[in-house]
Length: 403
Image 1 (cartoon, one colour):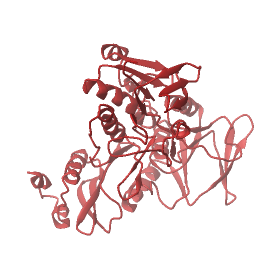
Image 2: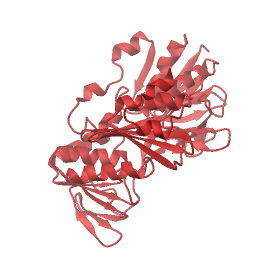
Image 3: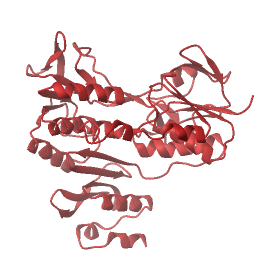
Image 4: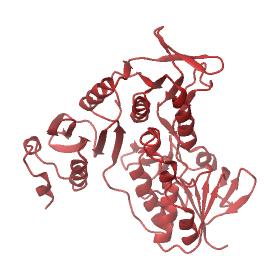
């Protein structure tokens, strides 16, 4: 059999694997299988500019049809995979077709978590992960007077911001005592709580949803404390789960995601995985799961190299971003557990927080400071820790540390 690499999943990670294989001079067949009926597209704008009506659907597309022809990549859309046989090195599609492979890549992404509550299946109870979800939310927002967003993380807050831009009342229900608690420090949480309240968003902390009410569609959200809200639309932003069921059924090692090493290799020969479906196991046994465009791209490059018998570990500092109203939050994260935080101010609604553990810089959170964010990533990549005194001096040139 001639060489054929099958990539399961035609999102950002899957596309990157295919592109990188050609860049690595792989001359065999590349088959890119997409479960959705859409060509590879950008997901982050769905809850940001796209939902706010500030960008067109066609601008989400990552590569046009001519790209796949020029690169001899066989893109099949609407082709869900039913099973993988690692011993026979075959993939069986939902329609029964069986395909052989010499190399296999999982880029199956993740699925938004749905609540297990009474009324969760009512029309108007939504999650946001893909284009179909975004289109449904957008259509319902156009007819809504009020939306209740459950979950004060990135997705939930971005949806709330888009709703307010469209003049829809927005209520955010968060189980914890602050916004984005798993991702940012308390000062950033406080800043965004004030930002949303100033734009008319009602925020309820320490609140648990007990059920959803309605007949033809959702009409109310009931809280565990007996309170509740009338609403026309509910969006749950309560996290995502890795799509690893097919990989696990095939026998790959999984633990809330497909376990991979720093080169994106899975637990079977000639099998790799990249993107939101993966969990990276560190040498010390701890697990890291990153959901970001950067991770999808860099793991995709590593996965392609691994399939070509080459090591290209993903070692860059992880970074993330969120757009809410006219505010851009960017984070570069090199560690956890800060015990010192130093602000580097630069103007109204524009600052960075440099977070230290001991004398070591471990992360930087930037609000409307894109240049400082890029600098922070370079400092963290280089293992450099400017002194807190230097950071606190707004006139100090931190770039000089990189020379």
